[in-house]
Amino acid sequence: MTQAKAMNITVLPADWQTHGESLKEVRTQVFVVEQNVPEEMEWEEEDNHAQHFLAQHEQAPIGTARLLSSGQIGRMAVLKPYRQQGIGSQLLQACLDAAAHQKLPRLFLHAQNDAIAFYEKFGFIIAGEEFYEAGIPHHKMTLKNKAQAADSNLPEQILGQSEQLYRHKVTDELSALIASMVQQGSRSVCLLCWDLSPELLDNESCRDAFSYFLRKNPHSTAKILIQDSGKITRYGHRLLELSRRLPSHIEIRKIDRDFAEVEEFVLTVDDQGVILKASLDQKEFTCQFNAKAKAAEKNALFDNIWRHSETDPNLRSLSI
Image (cartoon, rainbow, N blue to C red; front, side):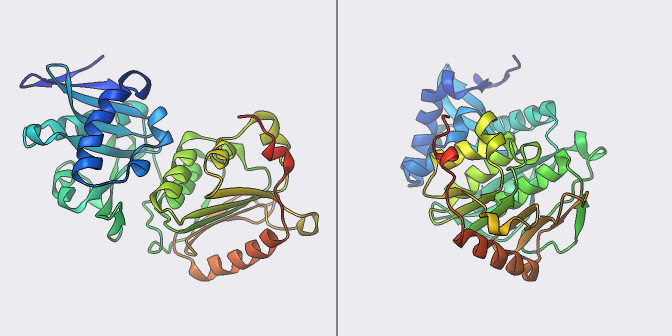
């Protein structure tokens, strides 16, 4: 286990099951007490499976950071008496090193405005307009993992701005584009998918993206329409598990048989982004992060099907 040390400060990898109390101690003081972040927004399901880092001074917890499988870095916190001593830099570097080891192709974070200059020193750049989380102004910032840059063709895309049309087959890059689009959303996600496409959607990156989207705005909603529930009933699915944990924000319904001829895969986010595969015969998905007219067309179709759909009892009874 590699540890970074300076001035009797140790930064070490941590996990929620082993170090949860120490991580909570720091984050409660920094986010809940100092910044008035509501506790229900601070503690997330992602903590249970994230890679955490814990800074200690003589074994006392003084700083935290978190890396998700989606490539998001967050929960960067250092107790006030220990700031301006390079501890935040050690925590961030630990996240970057772990991301390189995991070969994550894209890294991003949501920086509080007064921390933007700090992240810029590490090569992060602003990617989007200002937004608010827990009443605090933020900007999304991105960093391409240099170790993967030569091998990855994944384009940098910003919801509501990037108009270029991309075509992708079922690949890890397509799954990453789906996660990126969902994560950038702030209001609504509509997904029509015949069997909830496990090869695209049943992974930690997509689960983390949906979870983050739903938790960052108390009014955000995700609606999912499927035709065949057999596979996810038998084998389970991360998005189905999420719908059971957040039933007021995400709902899965079965498409009525009168709409059996609809497209195979449609994803719209915030009436702006669209990812589409028209039929089984079509080999490629099209992806566009700023396609308002197409999004409006697909949302009208989706809303009509949604009104005539209902919850599948097999999904309600699934044991998770």
